[in-house]
Length: 245
Image (cartoon, rainbow, N blue to C red; front, side, top):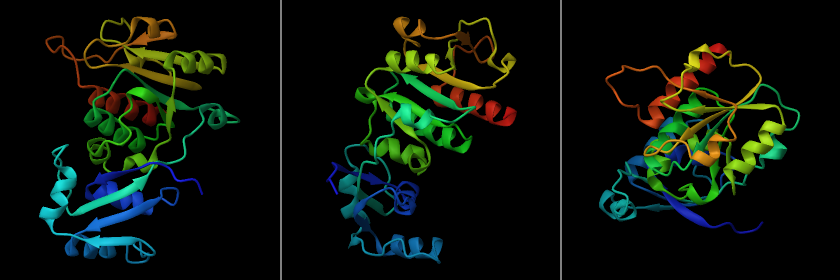
């Protein structure tokens, strides 16, 4: 087995879901005595720590793993390897009615983590991100996703526009979410294969990327409010589409 690069994650849900995921290789786990008891209590029928290197630490000792990102470890830290990279071309073969979310220059780990949590909760089929912009080893992303990184197909691509162009050729409709659109997203009949494209918090969709969209849509909000946070916007959209399906 080839050795992939490893990194650390922290937080109860992030660590426990990584342990539960048969595709995820966990190299080491660092726990307090209390968090070990909790793992056994929550998973009475399966020993998640079997064959693992478990190191017992005090809360204070675990703090040093989280200092750089200022997050709470809750008594759980793990060293894990990256999952196998999903190939978009392979994944879409012989599948129908797929809904992907695609992020254009969104880089904030907390926002991406929250969006991953919503996407997994509302049965979105996958997340498309630019490899270079995706904070794939961020403890904050894993903590914000609350274990949902283990439940969502994440496609890290080298070029967003090339991927959108390819998906259009494969009968996907590309919907760009922009606040200045005339069309409310709830007026769309969400059938067939769709990509929901969201731009960065600051300047929205990249001008060049807009060329690869078929439609622009918006979320109707109070006219006195400028915009919604991207992860909140995405949750509203994912929930609505999931209800329709």
